[in-house]
Amino acid sequence: MKIIENGTRPSDIGGESNFTGHVRRDPIYMADAPSRLACGQVTFDPGARTRWHTHPVGQLLVITAGSGQVGTWDGDVRAVKAGDVVWFEPEEKHWHGASPTTGMTHIAITEAENGSAVEWLEPVSDEDFIKE
Ligand code: MN
Image 1 (cartoon, helix red, strand yellow):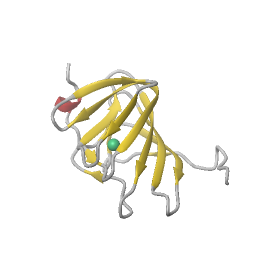
Image 2 (cartoon, protein in one colour):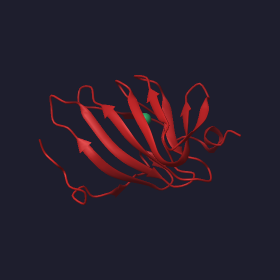
Image 3 (cartoon, protein in one colour):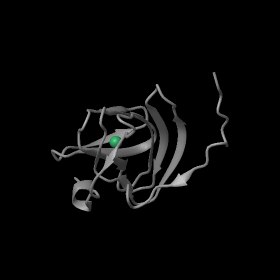
Image 4 (cartoon, protein in one colour):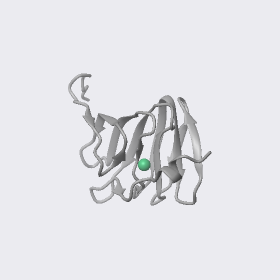
């Protein structure tokens, strides 16, 4: 057993290769093999979102604060709020982020396959992000 104390895992700011807008990442845990677990908290300012991306064996999101949006390549955009849980299927092309006007924080729980937990793709356009 080990306990990783709060304050020992520095926050960082997400870059343009992965995100649009202002995003803070707070690592939770990256497990060593044989586990394939990668877990982190991500906080999106209003309007911020990931790029389009896929996960080789899926991803679970736990929305922990605020309200935001999740979208899939078929054009579906859904509102999510604190307490909601979202599952993305393996290789399902998707994005997640804030709403246009409200910030959102989630915990992302992902498993790697062959050392990779995500494939980053193109940015999510404003047209795909704002579906009202
Ligand atoms: Mn994802």
